[in-house]
Image (cartoon, rainbow, N blue to C red; front, side, top):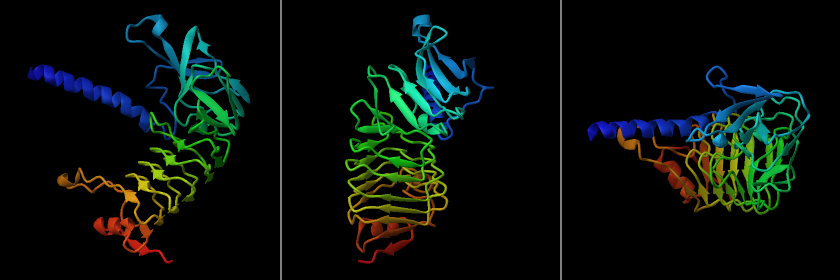
Length: 307
C-alpha cells in the first residue's frame, strides 16, 4: 500500500506541475523551441495536443505563435487536417494589425496583448465563446473582459463589462503594455492577476464602481509607483501589489476595506503573504481604519490621510 501511495503522490505532483508550469510563461507568452516538439505552417508555429485514447479524431493543435508578415490574419480552423484548439501567443506577429477569430478557437489569456501592433479584432457571428466591443475581446455576454490588443497603450473598458479577467481561469491582461486604464461604468471586479507583469503602468487609480481588487492583480508591475484605491473598493487580495519594486504608496480610501493576508507559512519562519512586498511601500488610510490596523499588524509604514 505504501508503494502504491508513493506512486499516486508522484503522479499527482507531475499533474500539478503540468498545470502550473504554463502559467509561469504567461508573463512573456513565449516558448522554448528546443524543448517543445513544434511544427510550422504558413508562418504559424504549433504543437499537437493528443487525446487520451490516441485517436486522430482527438488531436487538436495549439498555435504557439505566428511568425508571418501579414498585416491582416484569420486564425485557421484546421492545420494539416487537424483542428486548431487554442492560440497561446502572438508576440512574434510584428506586422499584425487586424485579426479575425473563428468559432471554436480558444485564446490563452493575454495572447492578444502580446501582439505589439494589433489594434482590430473580429469574431465570427457563429462564435459561441467570444464577442467584441471597442476592440476588446469579451465573453459572449459581454460582461467579462478577457483580452485587449497589444497595439494600444490605453485600455478603454466597455460599459457592459463587470469584470476584467476570466471568472473561470482568473487571469486577465498578463504582461500587457498598457500605460493607463479608463474604467467602464459597470466594472466591479479586477480578477486574479488581471494586470500582472505590466511594465508600462506607473500610476493606477481604481475608482468608479470597482469593489474588488483580486489576488495578484498588479503583481510584478515593475514601474508602478503609486496606486490609489477609491472609496468603493471593499476588498484587496493578497499579492495585489507584490513584486512592484518601485511602488512607493498605496492609498486606501475605504475605512472598512478588507485587506487580505496569508499567515499559513509563518509557523515555518516565513513572512506572511501581504498585498505589498517588503516594508518600503507606505500605506495611506484614515485614522482607525482597517488600513491602519493592517499596517500596524504587519510592520508596514502607515500615513494618515488628511480630510
